Length: 326
Image (cartoon, one colour):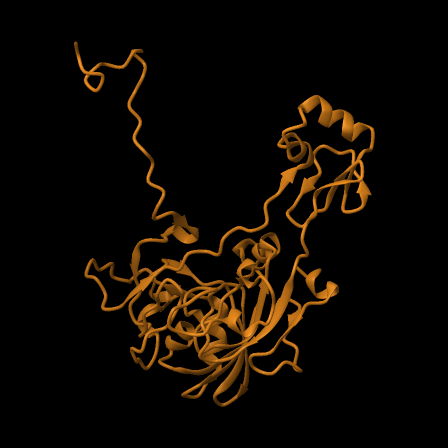
């Protein structure tokens, strides 16, 4: 008799299926979480947690080119000297589910009983009688049926943090202190960062457990303006504002930056507003003029401004009106 391992498939249309590889998942911008990408001229190396290395450089010129030079950029196949490991996105913690599907997933309900319960007004979501089967239920929603709590829900938490220098924008890190270490809150493992900052960049940082809210802040489609205070090593002249408004070509991403607004405050200080969050974007923009950024501080995200009463390392909960800004 033929061994079962050597027998042909029972049906002619049956094909052998191989397991799908789930690692090296594709990230926004075509990046893969498990791959190492090259980025010349930044003078630093970034790990999976975004920790900057110790390689020194005077500027970021090699990582950017003006629009006029885009056509003449030589496509070289030689690997650059510095490599950057793409950090993975924070996990999606806020899932939506239709109310009828939420109820149907419970063992004691079928589709007919769910329709009857909704039509008779026996279901409440967050204290309100809900008859719409398409109503979105979140992890923060309190669902009640006939005075029986099916899902107690949990409170959505939103924090504003004044990030200091020498702190990693990550939830955990084996070598450095993280921004979550600055929070004295329970269940910190449920929190994530809505928009990271570099290791030595200071300023406004938002932390939450609401993934849907944080995605509205960080997804490129919203074009959320972020304002930075910048101090540089050399003088800032009128060329900077014109060049930033036109956009710069970043050869690594093969993109042209969105128009940015620059306001010169002093000979070596300025305020920059951008709607993107490319890797070391501000440093690379000033590096186009061979001008090293000495200090970088984020002042605001959209209409939300960093509370001036917060010292570096301090934080507070966001008010309802501040949460509603996004």
